[in-house]
Length: 185
Image (cartoon, rainbow, N blue to C red; front, side):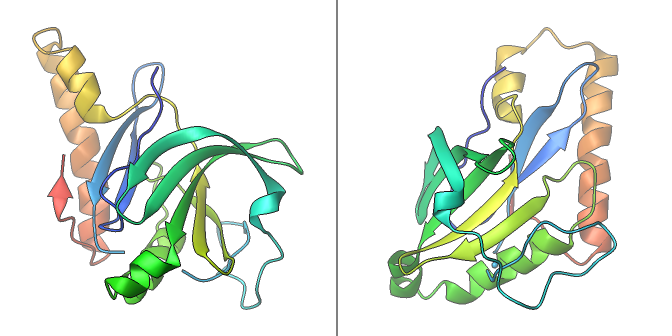
């Protein structure tokens, strides 16, 4: 399958995994966004209070997945365990220029608290002098909209109902938690 792509800058691009009969399909929702530092943690623990020791040097960049208004998203390998992630690099100067710092903090907070099998988990956040970094689960499969375009007229009614149910399940989770999507594609 294709690779997940990120668009839309900091009008948050949440990547949702839609189950498929044999592999993940990806779609995105754009919401308002957030950052501080957090390390990977067990599901039942809250984010750590102290800063993590991770830096951009702890990851090996493989290739760019997408470009947004405030930065880029890269496929990366974490050097210590060779796991693959998607790393969003957000330029602080662009955030400051457009007064979007608060939205970056909200994005991080939302991503770190969402617990749903259809939402990519935020694994790490950290920053350096120039950038904020969000490291999330990496999912192959491309954007859901591209899957639909490639399969226009080919999907059975049963498959269409399946995907609609998956999307509704994710949206119900968000709405139950007081999160409203702003750009469903």
